[in-house]
Amino acid sequence: TVNTVKDEPLTLGGKTIKNWDGQYHGSMSISDALLNSWNIPAITTFQEVKKVAGSKNLTEDLESLGIDMSDQDPDLPDSYAIGGWSTGVSPVEMAGAYATVANNGKYIESHTVNYIEVVETNKTVKIDEELQKNVTQSIGEDVSFMIRETMLSYTSNGSGSYAYLNGID
Image 1 (cartoon, one colour):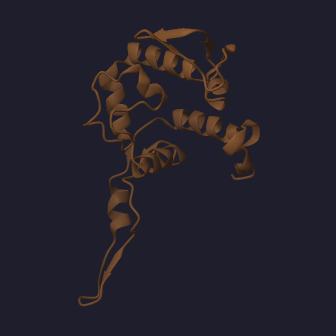
Image 2: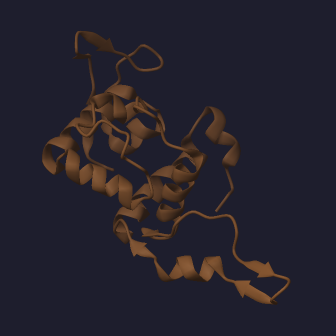
C-alpha cells in the first residue's frame, strides 16, 4: 500500500481514461490513490498485478473471497479495476469479501441464518457451526491487515460518504 503509482494520462483501446475530477495528480502511494478513488492508478496497478500474477491466479484469489467468477471474462479486462465487470458482484459476495478482510483473511461462506429449530422434532440445525468448520484462509493475515488499515483510513482522511463513518472501530 505504500508503493508509488503514477496518476498520469492513460489511453486504453483508443479511449482516454479520466479520474472523477478530470485531473491528473502525479506520483502517490497506492493508499492515497485508493483514498481518493483515482481511476488511473487503479488500472495501472491492476495491470501490473495481472502481469505478475496472471489472470488465472487473480480469478482464484477472487473466488477464494467468495466472488463467483464463472460468468466473468477469464482475461480480466483492465476495466475490472474500476468496476467494469461483465455481470458485477452481488452484495452478498461483497459482504463475504469484506468479512474475510475483517476476519484476518479467513473466508466463511456468507449466511444470514445461524440455526434452524424444527418444532416437530425439537431438533436444531446449527448452520453457523457447520459453516465455521469449513473456514479457509483466503488471504494472508498481513494482507488483510493492510487492506483493513487502508479502508479505516477513509474514516479519518476520506471525504464525501466515507467521512460520516469516523469513530467506528
